[in-house]
Amino acid sequence: MLFMWVKILSSIDQRNKLLQTVSLAVDIEIRNLGDLLNDLVVLRDSFNEIVTEAQLVAKKCKIGEHFHSKRVSNHLRHFDEEAKDHCFETLEEKFKVNMFLLIMHNTTI
Image (cartoon, rainbow, N blue to C red; front, side, top):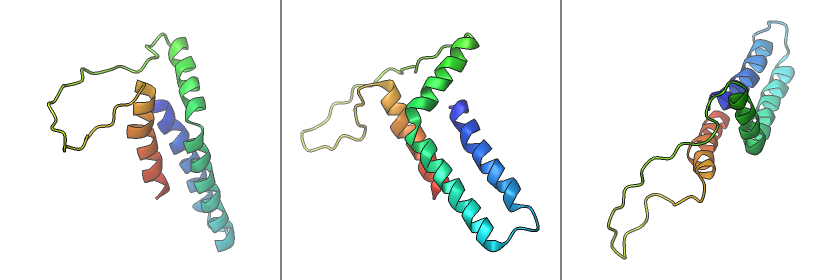
């Protein structure tokens, strides 16, 4: 997750430094904000590449590179109850939906 935040925050930081310069015109600032939004959309769509890079870095640092699972509690549900938690096929898919896409959505709003 740290690798993902580094990519997001470095993109925001680059645009922030450009926006803080005094001599920029409004149209250039608007274009920079549009470029930032495009960068975040590209990051959102490149989840698999980010995970692959993070796994390579983790392997070089000799850190565990797999998603850890928690014990799933079994709850007796009645036939008319809705499932509150969706069963994901892999832990990577669960991380992508519950963390990555949520963070990307909140940063692009």
